[in-house]
Structure formats: structure tokens, C-alpha cells
Length: 71
Image 1 (cartoon, one colour):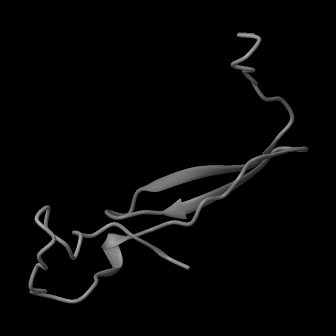
Image 2 (cartoon, helix red, strand yellow):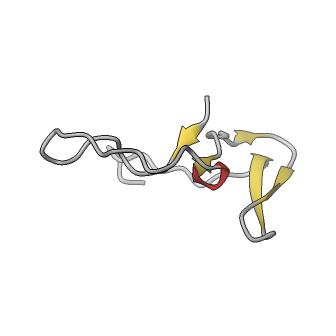
């Protein structure tokens, strides 16, 4: 399921905004991709403007924080 990052349909007061256009491709965000422990795997994604973002699918090491122990 795609993540839509456009304007909300509802106003603060609970009223509805009238749509002035349909959804656009640049308003759709990427789905979450969780990183796992393993051999390094990367995925390049083309974003708006022709630039690229790199997603880490797997990595050998991770920094982990335990909030209860504060370490």
C-alpha cells in the first residue's frame, strides 16, 4: 500500500477541503524498508529531480540503544 504525503482531506474544524486535483506521483512516499543484520546490501532509488537515495537493506553492524539501561 502506498503512502500518500499530500494535503489532508479534513480541516482542523472537521470540515472537508474541496479537491482541486487528483493525487500526483510525486506525493506518494516509499514504503518502509527495515534493515536486517547480514552481508551489506544496498538499494538505489530514483527520487524527484533525477537524484538518488540509497537504502540499506542489510548491514553487518548496528548501533543499538536500550533506553532502560541507558547503554
